[in-house]
Length: 127
Image (cartoon, rainbow, N blue to C red):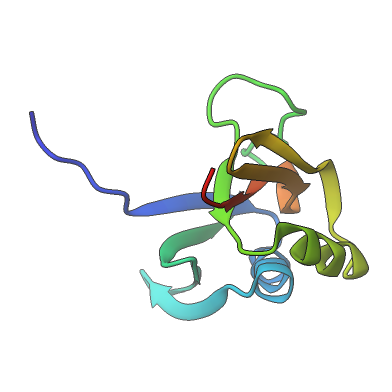
């Protein structure tokens, strides 16, 4: 079987600049601006991973309401989840699940990003 590795997440947004700014200001993503086919392109680096943001148009459906089938969320590892949650709340980030113990050694929380993207925050410690 071929070996696969993670390459990127691709988001669509009616306002890529605002979406990139949210990820930069709230989660510390690095914003990378380039051009593709002569058009501006915005990519992010977050936790060592690439996130591509494409401009959506009138032909793109609105974001679904949670829960829905398909990609449910993506997860970000963080140390000190309670302090991170307090800082994000102070910045106005909406929590859909407050920090809680999921199982021994794992605490989780969920936040809502632009276009209703669900983002899990995880803190892993020795069980």
